[in-house]
Length: 71
Length: 221
Image (cartoon, rainbow over all chains, first blue to last red; front, top):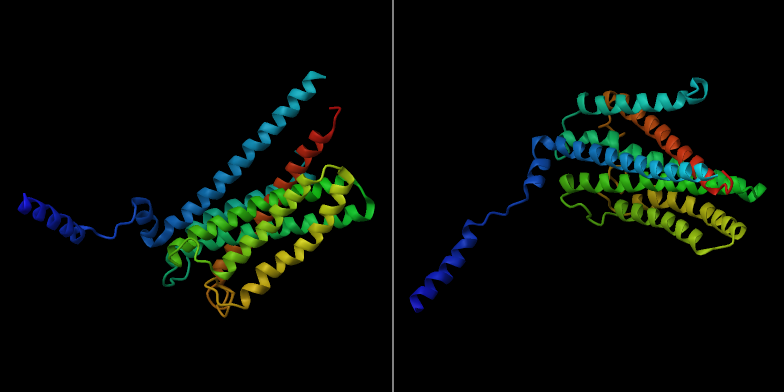
């Protein structure tokens, strides 16, 4: 039993040797290819924000339309 | 759409399309650390310029309100702040993404980042202040005065204070701006149209918000 525990503990300790400081796949992609994807991510973010704004204005106009129909 | 009145919307759209396409395709100087992410200059920086222009419009209408007491000016002041905040948030988030891959951390508590965040908080406070006051004339007057004080504070926070301490951000704390030697004529050909274009799009968004808000305010539609 003792030897089994020792083996297990040593296995756990040696696990660290295999562990690489690993970043997520997203971070790796963004940091790669000369960092062009950083720009792509920012452009995408701006686009998403503008689309979100478009939706919010759409919702407000819809409410106004309903209000004017009721009259 | 009347061309004689809407030409600037078309111009803004064309400039933004041009700057996006050429922002990705044009040649850029090869620099260490930045690499291709230098192209973010065409996206991150115009956001801030658009924000500053929108906040200036807001101050203009706030002063106008204090002069004439017209509710319409108050409405325009709020809506330009609303539009400006959208661009400010975009500026700070695109800045954080850029910083993550060049400075190593999304938020490294750099002076420029911190003061930019405080400048945005100033304008959040403006909106909160408005919500806290029920009486319309009083709300308009107090928030107009607040706005006039917030604007120079924002300018100081963004352009003066970051230059005093050390900063990673170009143009601050002894760091030269892109203008010094990196922003070559090829980049200027994209950068200036990008700024002009995004300012026009920002103004367009503000006019849309103001028009909708004005209709919402009308009780009899």
